[in-house]
Length: 239
Ligand code: DX5
Image (cartoon, rainbow, N blue to C red; front, top):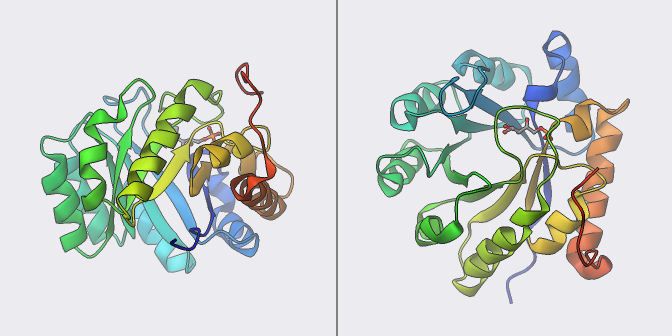
């Protein structure tokens, strides 16, 4: 029986005050974060525009935190190299956007970074499961991507569990990640469903003490994953 994977809380910079970026990076690192999520949005795949490779360069210059780049773009094959050159430690792209997801996962790994594959809430895991052997992370979106502060979609919980079961039954190293609406009201059920990594924006940066928020989320996720949490019968949407 493989030892349980470490829980990672991954602050999403989409919700961070970029005027205090260096301070906030230090703050979340002091709370135990080892990664930060850089949401890249092109205004086509999602109705928002966000960051370019320069932000990854900034992060890599300012802290030892690792940059988890989430490409919400229609052309990940074109964009991924830009972020790899900027020093991304992981590049995650969407199954819905990739021309050849397996090839792109291989290319990202060949470039020396971890490779992740993401699916939106309405996308079935069917297309994702065959790729888990090529991926270092499977990102199950728990909101429709595009903005921070959206409501956690409990309807996605069975998909998280399905990916967890597939990873475990095949003895794969792929991490199961969730992103969107993760906070103290929702993290336990996401952990109980099988997630390893929890991307959180407002749940960290809208809090008065982001470091304390990271620690609290990690404690709650750990307790839930270790069996201290029975999900409510039918969670009626998150707070
Ligand atoms: C949504 C982004 C998420 C978002 C998370 O499109 O991919 O990473 O920033 O923010 P919260 O945790 O506030 O939903």
